Length: 128
Figure 1: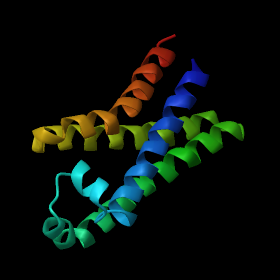
Figure 2 (figure 1 turned 120 degrees about the vertical axis):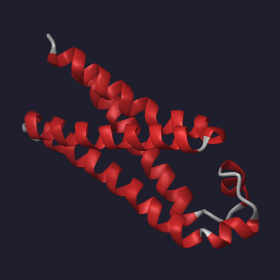
Figure 3 (figure 1 turned 180 degrees about the vertical axis):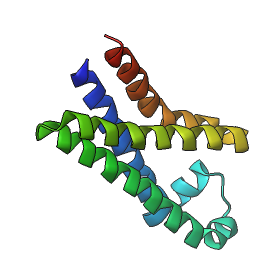
Figure 4 (figure 1 turned 180 degrees about the horizontal axis):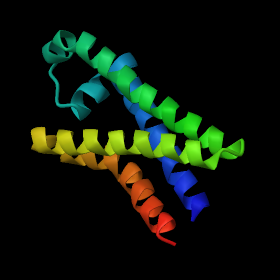
């Protein structure tokens, strides 16, 4: 069970690294503009906001990776706590995205599925 939890947490972190890249590095590219339903003018006007938002996603990924590293270094309690917090934050952001922008529900699902699975598996694991 812990191996599966580790893998879905790793996936959650990787998704958030990708989101960082889209928001902070590639925001005005045609593919990313299309994914976020932005015109060139909208993307340019929101570039600074997206740049900042991308770093939030990067920090969530780094926190998740740091928690996984702690688990590997023999500190499962603190490591799983850190991963759980970051996954809870990721899931919360996905819920807010789905609720505030229904047209972005697919993105919210992508953003929140792995963190949700990690948290669900964590509850099952803890109840054993």
